[in-house]
Image (tube, rainbow, N blue to C red; front, side):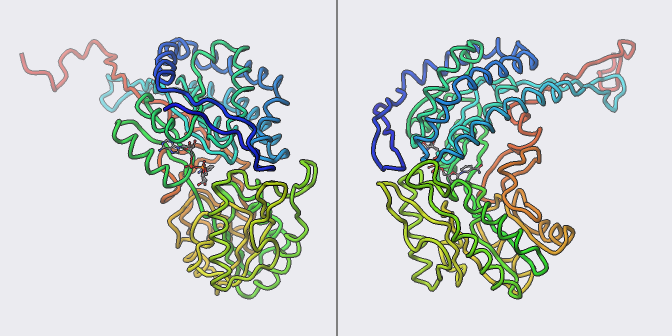
Length: 475
Ligand code: NAD
């Protein structure tokens, strides 16, 4: 486990240097150090931990420019890097507010026996491991880390090898918060380092692709630790006759092209009732054609580059397969474009697509809106559910009630009703990832915190007068 990872700039395709990977010895020593410090962190109590996290928030805010610059250099997009940073600070605040309330809830009650009370004592996993992907490097590294820390766990984080530059300014921020530095460490490296982490932790949170998630799940099972897996998606949207097509087309453009489509909850396929298909496609294509590329400068409005070079062949394969099988480009790119050394795709609307095409079945992770006409809501639901994925979905209909009724039939953990991709913005609703899109408890809502806590039942005899309950042997 030696070596280094490359710092690649997706706008230029050039290497800006390397970072040394964490070695096996460093990993061993770090895990030991975190375990040693965790009891004191837990003993701080939830209010004490909230106070420390708020100080960290201030320390990160001081380094705002450095963190955003690092994120932008790795991802090639500036606007989303600013949004990521602000979302990260907002999430610290949310957990610092929420966790004390959740811990304060009374967990003591009298059992059916009457003289035995039950007290539910919450005990954190000592060391939580977190492995994150490249599409939102900061948000997806911290989305599980913050509730884990608030629960009282120590955290070992490995961000993606594709986007590791934010680690340096983040580490610097920890200098101002020694209590946190003692229980939180970041390791650098690729999947080899990720795989090496698993034996050292008590629980692993993994966000990434389905194939890697399967490996992580198997490794976790071999070490008998829980794996919380948040994996890929192929989110469907359904647009029924009577829906506000103007609003639906705008919402779906945002849902499919935010972060240039490089989001797990991106809309990747659209089913439109035949009677409104042509009108919808015209609207969508006209609006799509107005969205440009964020090139040549960060200030140019439009979509950023493909962040990970290794994603390009997948996008090219899906597009070529669709075109070869008869899909028609109504707006956007018919191939991955090369500008300034980076790889770029325009907001691309496709019609004439079928479920025989990879672009309708596998995760593309680009700004594509393939649109298919369907006879009615039943066919739309059948096709939307015809997928190994079940992350999220969207439904547009004439009324909220109609859309809700269709949403309830979809095999997906979250469904936006008369809007799209709301899970990117609204994190209070508990949701599971269905089918191959994940495993484990809800990372959203209050349940997120409890994933890092085990319940210990204290069964307390409260009435000393009951000297001989029925289960004691007779004298
Ligand atoms: P990936 O699976 O290639 O890598 C994710 C992480 O796993 C990286 O840090 C990588 O170094 C590490 N890794 C690789 N092999 C490993 C192994 N054997 N053991 C342990 N760790 C290993 O995914 P990616 O390309 O970085 O990210 C894109 C994928 O992430 C897409 O499929 C996307 O849908 C998914 N994603 C899911 C969510 C979600 O919340 N469901 C959010 C964002 C991204």
